[in-house]
Image (cartoon, rainbow, N blue to C red; front, side, top):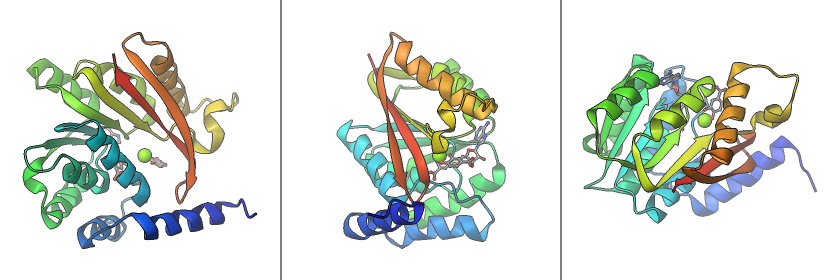
Length: 223
Ligand code: SAH
Ligand code: DHB
Ligand code: MG
């Protein structure tokens, strides 16, 4: 059996072909990111479908995303919440936000999505101070050094039963490499430690392989 990264990608392609219906707008969200020179780091198509399923299983109406890029994952969330739902997605880079807005228009979800442009630490703190209605699902997928701070702020923006998902928990095993002191890796370690120890959360993490290499998701529910 071939266990190479190429094989992981080939199996992802097979699973996406069998199971993931991407319309032109979802495909365009990926290609537009490349055309505008944005990094190829959006979730894989089957991961987008997975996040949409989590959202539907949670009967979520309000989703908060930290890290928009070109809006690919946000389109999945917007379609999962449907009309009557709302997605707030936070993006530091105004150029990314502009590409994402075009993609939301093309996908027919622009009316469901608020793009908040700015450092997520500031935006999340402001949303908490405003006392916005709690979010049902939160997807944390921006700069990894701030993941513990995003988790702490998120806990002011949720209710019992809300679901928190974190991306990029494994990064080819970097998370357990003791010689790796990269703040991004340490941020992931502290995020996982918080999920494992915070009495407000029940959570776990799963490794993934596929078209994005060897990585993983954390998922937690608010007690
Ligand atoms: N969730 C997206 C991918 C997000 S990539 C998808 O799957 O389609 C991470 C994004 O986080 C990038 O667009 C980057 O500009 C943004 N980002 C990085 N640091 C940030 C910060 N401090 N605040 C908000 N967004 C940030
Ligand atoms: C990177 C960031 C991501 O959110 C991701 O899913 C993959 C890679 C990165 O910064 O390299
Ligand atoms: Mg990611």
